[in-house]
Every structure is written in C-alpha cells, then in structure tokens.
Length: 133
Image (cartoon, rainbow, N blue to C red; front, side):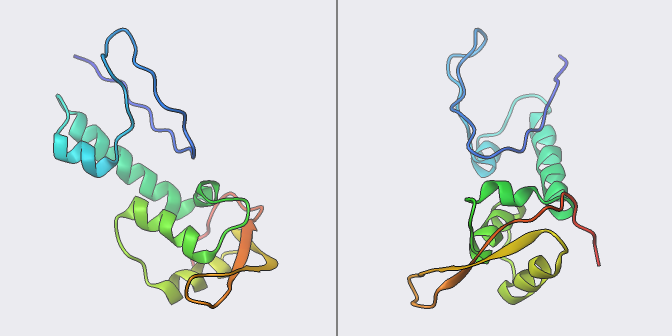
C-alpha cells in the first residue's frame, strides 16, 4: 500500500465530497482523528503534517489568513494556540507579533470587547516570512 499525503494550509475550506472509494467524507479536528486512530501509518503521516504546519506558522505569516481582514491580537493568538495546542503568554505574544517587521499593521481603529476595554484592530502586513530574533 502506498500513501501520498498533501498538506494544505488554507482557511474556510469547502465541505469535502465523498468519492468513489469512500462512503462519507468529512473534516475532523486533529484531536478527533488521533482519538479515532487512522489506518496503516496514517497516524504518523498526520503527526508529521501537524509538525510541518506548526513550523509554517513559526516562520511564515500565514496565520493572518485565518483571521478576518481586521483582527485583534487575541484573535491572531487563538490561531497559534489552536495549531500549537498550547496557551501562549499574552504579553509576550503581543510584543513578538507587533515587533515582527511587516507581519501586522495597526488599522487605527478599535473594537468593543466583552470586558469593556476596546481592542486595537490590525491587518496583515506585507511580509511573507518571519525572521527570528
């Protein structure tokens, strides 16, 4: 049995359609797929794909594609937390993303939040890679 795997990192994917070799096709959260267990060596392939996706977020600016056109630092942080599977330190994350040249740009606007303090809005900047400091 030969398996070919492709990793696509994209927001808002359409619902998958079952093909001739499957009865049903659906998207699963990685945690669900790990609980169910996959056939053959597919658990290993999934593990490798998740690690590659985590590295892509570390070195490229693709996380902003999973946010609306205008987003808060908290919304951007949630993208990283979901992919990395860990809660991130809020002040440290804020400093890193605002200090990364061209990663995000302030819009000059704010959005009301449930806690009463308006959150500054940002948009994706022109950079495509993140340079480690």
